[in-house]
Image (cartoon, rainbow, N blue to C red):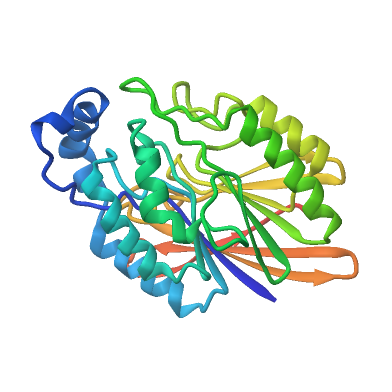
Length: 295
């Protein structure tokens, strides 16, 4: 059995004090949003309890699907790397960026510089997206949907080059008999998010999965637990969204939590069972329920 944990959207705070010159453009709107709303919505002590609970279940690997930070200040990336270090070493944890990690175009260089150790392929170096990480029966395929957008927009995009490389990788990994797990921040299907928050090339992504398949697709962005399905050549492919790992309030599916997936390779293929753990009404961290996947 191989145990994979998925968490997302920790939105690490507080935001370091920005210089006035750093709040030009979209960052200004994001900073106001943090100050008025997100600052009280995301609880770092609660996030620490979530991380401790994750480690209590001894996962083989931990995957974080983005929005580690808030407005892509240069001073945010180092603390986020420290957070990834608390999740695990570069061989036991992986990350992909989200839209808040990519607020401005200059953020892409910071992402590679600070988070590269958790996005390396077999070469041992971060070489861009998609990256492929092989571990046991799994092949993690990390994508970047985070792009710089206009204020008040939170859309994502993969782009043609990344999509073409993804298609090639998924075909190759299928021939190796590996369980292909895709990591992406935005929900990668039509209707997966509200207008202004979607993956703009979701139709093209759906076409890739229809042609190549995958065993599991994990995303964040919506701050809630969700299960959807895409058509693959051999059946349905589950697409599972995770809540924010630091959300201090909301309905059970929105409150801070994470997902556990256990993979077993059988003669018939891969068997995946999933569970959701997180903040309960009592204030404790506990089992929320089984993730009922149609495989």
